[in-house]
Length: 165
Image 1 (tube, rainbow, N blue to C red):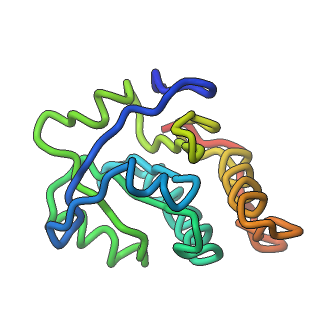
Image 2 (cartoon, helix red, strand yellow; image 1 turned 90 degrees about the vertical axis):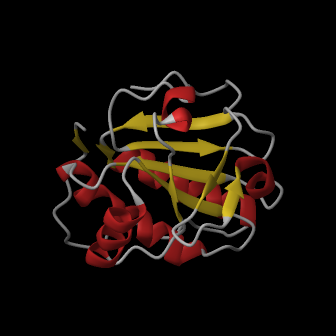
Image 3 (cartoon, rainbow, N blue to C red; image 1 turned 135 degrees about the vertical axis):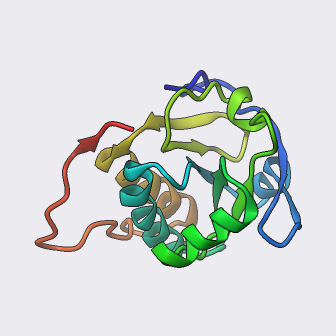
């Protein structure tokens, strides 16, 4: 669960990526909507869900939209996780005590949040949710003026509607 629910303002933050470069929500929102994927490397549902987040990232890149992972682990473990699961979107490191996770009221990972350019939360969900991923893809497509959303799931792929985190 999270306290950052649809219709409310997303808490602002600035966190370092795996190379120490800071990324802020405010700067990312200047480009357009931002998808946040909170995760922990030991979480089996995170291991399942984040490669689908990667598909969204690859479909839209940084074309006036942003995908950010927010890890609750250290740099080394997060880097290893990203390499193992083929994640190329920026992975940020929540600092000791998880100030950003706490600001968002997280109780479970993975948690996916879509923040609109005005800073308002549009999608907020925990666990693996097929619908949330498809909604994020559709929102990115709409923001970019594309006639259709990029497919997150491949034809014939057996994907459950939901897996709790």
